Image (cartoon, rainbow, N blue to C red; front, side, top):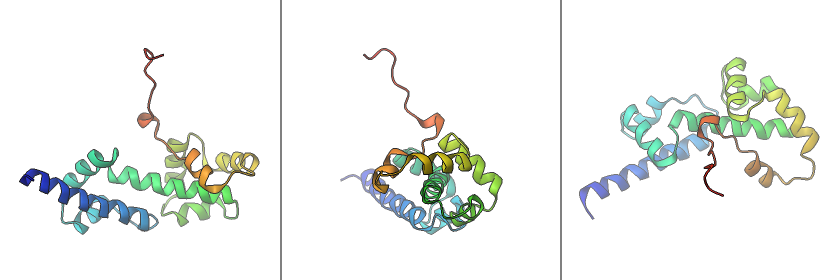
Length: 147
């Protein structure tokens, strides 16, 4: 194995640690600098390599995780939108609503109404897979020439 390949494997191992940390600590105040320091990388290098490995930068991945958790809590229906906002790690209701709408395509209150009216009988594991948020600019657009 060449030195470049060994370095790439070491970087991938560190990137996995960052991803796992985001998955575990999504509700905590996290920023790219802190995540990078935790694996002894520069913030710029972490962002570039994380995007190369996982398709989106670490901050976007964090926002996606927070919104996914918020979607679950909204479907459950026992907390207010404001409580959910703070529960998943946002410090501002406005930022939460903006990010949620950007990823899901509707505000959290509308999502809650639609999810509680139309999701009866769907197992949570299926619901999570089907409703996973996708950023509009990251969604795959079908090739019009393929039939």
